[in-house]
Length: 159
Image (cartoon, rainbow, N blue to C red; front, side):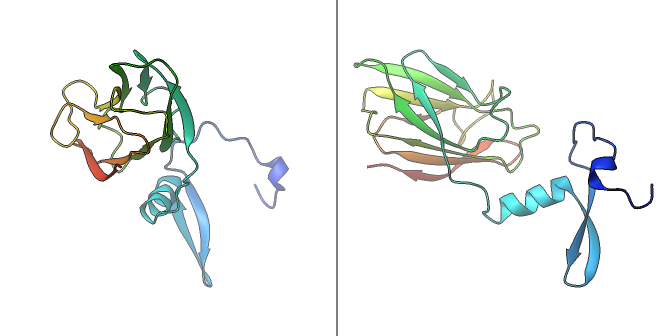
């Protein structure tokens, strides 16, 4: 291919994560895969803390395994519907294929003890050994991590 301008290079198909990239470390050129770089960046705390805001209400289901959530890791929940005993579900993606995935959830002042966001794994998978983790306090926060076998609450905050 010789010395081509970037605009002359062939277009890539959808990236898979195993593509190799040249990196320079000091004076040495090395190779790494996109997956290796992603693991390094996520493992050292460089992921973003800008939340996606989700307005939720009784009966809603937020399925984090759906297309559109693959690059989202921080969600602020805003309760927009009604009073009384109300529930909505947040379905975590399957543990298979999501090792080391982290989700952060926080609520704003719209939550009460009667508004419940139930964080649930898929099917018979578990979160902290159980079937769900309930968020039902204003300004509550929880962070969950997947070890490839189950989801684990690694940090929880409530008022």
